[in-house]
Length: 453
Image (cartoon, rainbow, N blue to C red):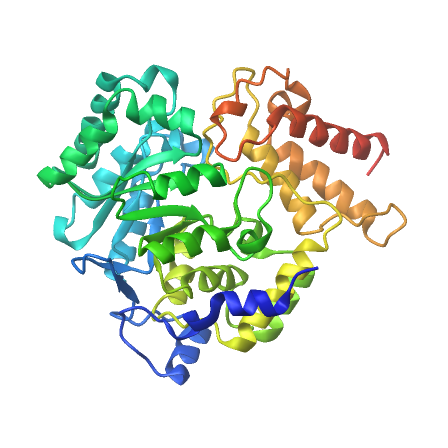
């Protein structure tokens, strides 16, 4: 049973923290939201611990860059640079100034695309965050890791990084191989000393004991990136650690948190029918996703909340939520707690995939993230009634199967998984991907076996 009192207490004084952005009257804020109009100059920002940076509370995550329509694809042009440029231009004009990327994102193309978009603007108008993403064994060596570091500078068209992360660490052995044995942690510390890294931090996916060790290992960390949302706050599953604990430990040490996965891989962007009705009944003018962003940003030791934005409508809606930002009040916190209870009441929970695509490419051609996305939507949004006797079951079953075939070509579906397990060590969530593929295949085949539409 979820403890309502503990949940509300956890946010505590965060309800009064609106960051360093300009204050607007609530009546003006409500009008802006309902009209869909973004008021220039109202993006809420927060100071970093050094006091040097005024960072937008909404951070632009660059892991889900828009792709071209399949009919418009040309060799080497899968990602839509023009659309991304427009999104970046609009975000900057509205006060978004933190852009997060990695050598691993978008099949290795993200940094180059981000660099092209940002380099058209004054370098002082934005903060770049990228990572040492030496996760594959062939990149563990000092030479390969340093080469990755310099390529990031080249692709991003910069001679310094504002925020640089030791990427996706979660166990002692992995950290030792990637950063200690090869001297890369010392190299990064020297780069910070030289001013080419302004703030050094790390992103966490892993064991609680390792998280504690990282905080006490003697290295000075300027920030830490953690998975935080209103489900994982007290109910993290799989390989994740409750965000309430992670945030609390950072807060005690004065290390600012950067939030990733505020929408839990998209599961909290729309919610199921019950959650949608709950949020829309409380505040019809706000999107369902905005509640998840506001939960994360209401915590005062959060520097910025990252959102992977693929379409301009994502950018607009998210900017509205933060321009200016209004923290959850006590009544709204109680509403979020009701959403937690509704989410936990689901008879089956989806796979905790965040769509990072680190598992790709699959050597046998499976589109792993898309399979999880389609399956999770069916479960978390409860689009398929639990029993064939329920009203609407036949129609919903047909819609799921047609959508499944349209989203994922037959030769890339779950039944083609060979169980090679090549994907498991690449997954930050440590998902048993072959086991989940088997579960999806059994689910789909059961629906198909019922016959007819």
